[in-house]
Length: 416
Image 1: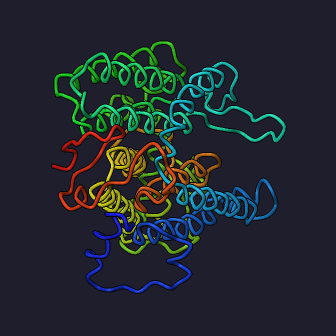
Image 2: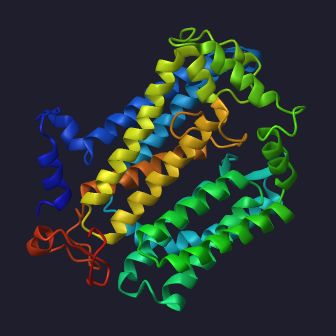
């Protein structure tokens, strides 16, 4: 049975755009979102090659070393994305609690025994293969999926404090605190996303105030006993103008942005890549503006705004609460991270260590971004697995009246 999303999408295609048959067969779900993802990957390869050329030649005697490494990781992320988008998104609800329980020991192991880089233990070494793994990416995805699961199952009990509110408060507080021990900016982003999901999930306003209080205490504890408290304080003071001595990163970023002009210096002509720390990840947006100018910066910003738009279209068209909240959470998380990264580069936010999703060079962060995008695309496909035995497909009457069913088949007003 054709799902509601497909029906609505066909109504939106007023231009009658025809895609190749192979595209329709292998790249299902929201077509515009697929194009956004391909555009991001293209931008990523161009800018990473430019940003890493000097470093690669200095370290590896080849200016394409990091480019080929990044291409390999990008291909791997597309494989993860494609596999994730082929799976009925409702299966992720079954895995969410296990993933969340696994996140706690992983985050603690990372804090105690992880690789310490720039006074922060954010990576843990994977046995046998020897690769590094940023556990906060896994925990972030697990928490968002689990909150979506809990809210979807309790839509008829959103006012029940003990059964609905308390579990979300506890898990959000624990995960955000553990992430904040070594990564304050990611912890704040995740907490903000969790707060938005509770609002979308119709949690009463007074309980949202309690959520804010839990987040305040979780971040405060992380700042007090974690590794990044002093660094975070110094960066905030520098951003507010109280500390002008340790602004090397932001100063170099501003130089890159200010010298880019309207059209930029041209691909591969960046000067600040030789001075700017992490020009291929944390400050890649500054390199984009320097080489491609204001036009390039606006285009990249437009890609993330289009990602936000398509995410919200998918949310509005999904037929189940879980799919809507899950797509919203993952979209907010990715776009919020992108806005923060770009804000740091142009001077409207304090310096942080978050990459630009699907554009910055990275390892596991690129893979988990691909997984998140794949899940969003899976939601856009609708309920495609007829054998799924926990959630029944909505009846034609339900679809006609634009209602959504939660996991227990109780009618709710998620869209109304």
